[in-house]
Structure formats: structure tokens, C-alpha cells
Length: 280
Ligand SMILES: Nc1ncnc2c1ncn2[C@@H]1O[C@H](COP(=O)(O)OP(=O)(O)OP(=O)(O)O)[C@@H](O)[C@H]1O
Image (cartoon, rainbow, N blue to C red; front, side, top):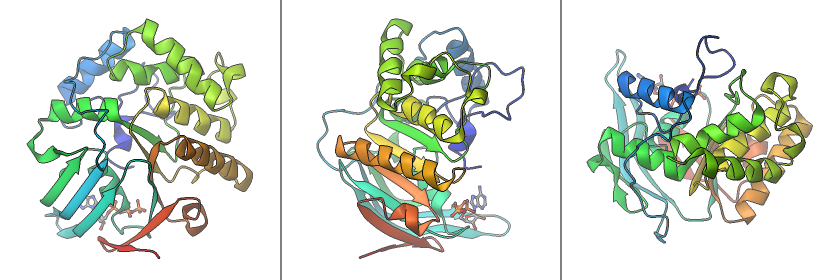
């Protein structure tokens, strides 16, 4: 499970856990993650610094000479001098085998991990200069996440699962509900809003997760093997949904080991042993 993914608790979460931690929660400060969970459980908007400019027209993400070194043991250079620009409206696939650095890229782009060296500008902001709270605020407002394992809360309805994203983005219940309904309509699941996730098919669960990811209108959608748990027909349906979201202007970065899935993206880069190469 990637670091970003750990911010979500999924069906495997302890039954006593009533809410999922989410991208708005500070990742390395358990105390504040707990406070965020409690606020979400009580339907209180989570207070996060309002960082970032939705009107910024430059690249969403600009990585220059980014490295990520894990001291180990064993020591690992997970990213080696990565240069990558993600422009607004891009639909990019990052393809690579196991252990190549995909999750490390996702953690970096998702503002969960910091480069060891190099520069990462998110909408022109050098993220190295942001506090944990500021990064959590930017993440909650600007980035949506979709995972292979869906990470829906089993005891909450489909509508409640989608509404939770708005809590972390600091929205009130009155603001969140219409957004969640619209997002569920967008993924063609309006007829299942009162269902719980365990009554849905895998493809439907992933559509709920996508509704949750897009309901607060993020500027970047990060997807980690979004079709990894789905059969061919459901995978195709999810890829068609991504196509629609991309056509609507959403910036999407997807990591995958599956060449066929990567073909759906407008642009592809390969990662091997921490090094990125452009696929022509
Ligand atoms: N927290 C960590 N501490 C030490 N090494 C790490 C850590 N996270 C990742 N690595 C190492 O960095 C390299 C890249 O890992 P990463 O998880 O980014 O690969 P991946 O392409 O996502 O793999 P997979 O497809 O199997 O999930 C691997 O050698 C991994 O063991």
C-alpha cells in the first residue's frame, strides 16, 4: 500500500473506525490525523490552510532533477533526477514494473513525500517551503485520488462516502451534498446513493471512488492502478470515464504496470529503476 493510499482506510479497516482518513489529513502527524477523523465523523469541516490558486494557468506540476533517496538498509535511489512537467489538461500515464518508483512518484506528486533533492513546483508553488498543514490543505483542495482497492467506508452509504471528500476540503454539509449528488450523477450511480459499498460490483465501487475524487473539483486526479482489481469490461468502463473527465479538462496522472491501460492516456512516460523516459 502506498503512502498516499494509507491516508484512506478501506474495507479492511477496523470495524470500530467510523471514518476514513483522507488526503486532507496530515500524513506524518497522527494527532492531527485523528483530529481530522473526528471532525469528519462529526461532519465538521476540517480546517486546513487555503493554499494554492485555482486560477493559476501554468503547469500543474513541474519536477526538476527530483531525487528520492531512502537510506535503508538497504539504501535505495527510488527516483533519480526526474524531470517532468504536467500541464493543465494533461492525461499522463506513468508505466513501470514493480519496484521501479511508481508509488514514490505518486507520493511526491500527491504532496505526501518530499524530494531528497531537486525542485517540485505544484501550480508554481515550491512545495519544499510548505508546512505539513499547508501541504495537507493544498492536497485536500487541489488533488483527487483513486486507488486500485477503492478504499470506501463499508458502514457508510455511497452518498456519505462521496460527501466525506468535501469535509476534508473544508466544505459544510450544505455545500457537500449537492456536489456529491452531482458527482454520483456524473459516474451514473445516482440510483445507488443509499446503498453501502458491499452491495456494489467492483466497477461500481470504483465509480464511487472516482465520484469521491472529483466531487470537490480537484485540479489534478492521481490514479494508482485504477483498473487493477477489475475485469476487462469494467476496466474499459473506467477508462471511458477517465476519457470523459479528461475531455472535460481534468488533469489526470495515472500510474500503472499495464501497457494496455496506459494506451488510454494522451501521453506516456516510462519509469525504470527511478529514471523517467518519454515514450514516443
Ligand atoms: N519508505 C521506503 N523505505 C525504503 N525504501 C523504499 C521506501 N519506499 C519505497 N522504497 C523502495 O524504493 C523503490 C521504489 O519503490 P516504489 O514503491 O516507488 O515502486 P513501485 O513501482 O510503486 O512498485 P510496485 O508496483 O511494486 O508498487 C523500491 O526499491 C522500494 O523498495
